[in-house]
Amino acid sequence: MNAEPVTPRYLEELRALSTCVVASAIEAFGVRLRNRGFSDSSLCCMFPEQPAAVGYTATARIRGSDPPMEGHSYYDRGAWWDSLLKIPAPRIVVIEDADSTPGLGAFIGEVHANILLALGCVAVVTDGAVRDLPEVRQSGLQLFAGNVSVSHAYAHVFDFGGTVEIAGLTVHPGDLIQGDLHGVQTIPREIAGRVPDKAREIMKSRKELIRMCRSHDFSIAKFIQKAKELES
Image (cartoon, rainbow, N blue to C red; front, side, top):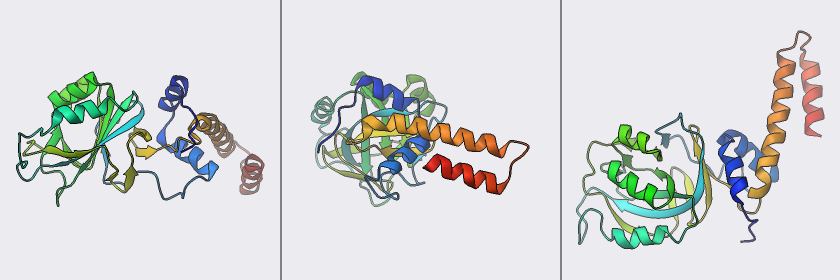
């Protein structure tokens, strides 16, 4: 992939933008279909008051309904944690729950959240379950999950470092990803460096259109004319 470098400054700019305006900015470049690259409504943001989380994806797959074939519930966790460090920071862990009914057991709770924070992670995205929400909120780690569970059951990693499918979103290791209260999306690396400027252009255009809607001399004809001017 011919990816433009994403500097820390650009990452900070992306954190200051909503996923909605970033999605609109991505659409403007025409690098992917408009119905691809973002999570569906089955994924929920656990802490919507937090700003956007932005980072590079480390992937894993878990199961929780049955005991692991060997070891304990965090089977091969040392190797998995080592693999996280091969991904650039800041890291966002994306975990696919491969159970026939995802989310029986929560893989991420208070202790595991603090382990991931120590490894430079800023968020977890999973179609499975999470738990210990008050404690994880205080830790600062953001969570996006399919549901909440009381128990971790037999939740264990059985595979990591490959492509995963989460809530209609395909994620590869090292993808640039952003998430906030609206959901999660990947940001194509080849245009990532240009997304913040395009997003600011879109926000400026939106403000002009909203200003016209709130003006005393608003009319549909004037609105359409203004919209055409902004698109040109």
